[in-house]
Amino acid sequence: MTPADYIKKFDLPLGFEPPLKLSYQDIVAWPLTRNDLKEDMEAVNSSLDTIRKTRGGVWPEEAVTEEFDLLDLAWHEREFRDKDSFAYVVYTDKGEYVGCFYLYPMGHRTQLTEELLEYDIDVSWWVTESFYEKGYYEKLYLALKDWLVKFPTKKIYYSNKELPLITN
Image 1 (tube, rainbow, N blue to C red):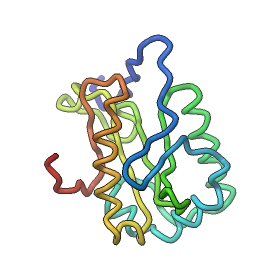
Image 2: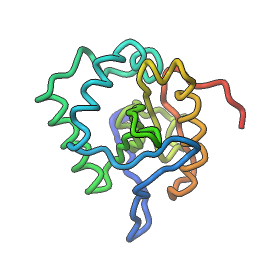
Image 3: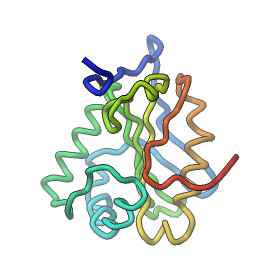
Image 4: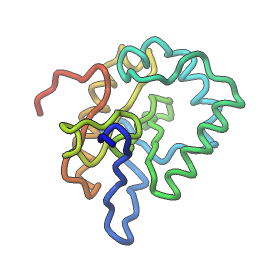
């Protein structure tokens, strides 16, 4: 067997509770749930090309249906509850839907290689096309870099296809 055959489980301390809120400048994030269905479905479907260009990966292959998105959000909710992965929804402080970010164990989203074994967490995110044009893709990246110090991880892997050219 090779590393590609595995998913590296999170190594979380006993009793660890993931943060329930991210606040950074004018954005706020909290766990993604079925309550976000309407806004999430609209955001994904209006931003398919932007998501594929920036986040990469196999999702979304096509526009999401209400039934598919409901099941997807319920799955994210269950994984968050069980601490298998963590999905968050991002809004502006004025209530505008910005996008989502995901914290996965290594090997879940990105196939493990010898070089990636040293990483503890796989971080990806997307923003809607309109918020991408307003610079929120970079802003969310900076927010994640700042906020992820709350997670007990040693090394973070940002798996998006397009990483912002930000050095801080």
